[in-house]
Amino acid sequence: MPSDAAPLRGSAATMPRRTVELTGTQALSLLGRAPLGRIVFTQRALPAVRPVNHLLDRGQIVILTHQDSDLFAQARDHGERGVVVAYQADDIDPLTHLGWSAVATGYCRPVTDPDALARYQRRLRPWSDQVMDRAVRIRPHLVTGIRLVA
Image 1 (cartoon, rainbow, N blue to C red):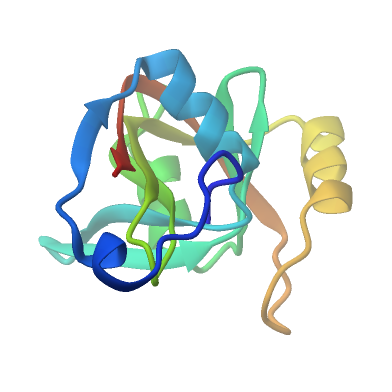
Image 2 (cartoon, one colour; image 1 turned 180 degrees about the horizontal axis):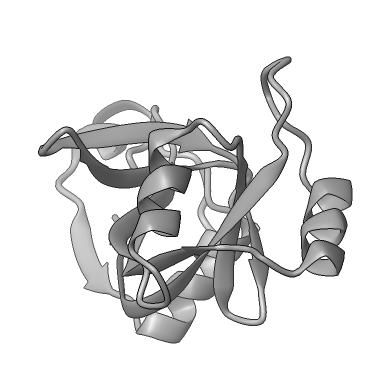
């Protein structure tokens, strides 16, 4: 539940929500504080979504991956420009239905600097036992978001 809202009970929890648009700066800030998000990319010409943890580094979203992942292969194979992806995170209370959602769309590129990769590996912990020996960085071009308020 958002820290600035009191829990709603009874009929207040079922009242309609108002949607408030966030600025790109607000949305990116909230996204950066979220513990997890979803990377959206194309896999065999179809949309693919993966839950991942991330960090925000100088306005760019960084996630760990592995050399054999489809996402890493696409980012690598698209050269300097990178591959278009979307990254989404949210924090919506399941009881009150209050919270926020943010989406960043931009180009995803592999992290090639060994020092940066080592720094990201120290700061991010993989969720699975698979070795995450690569990282990708998303440079957002469009960041949108909404806040759901009572």
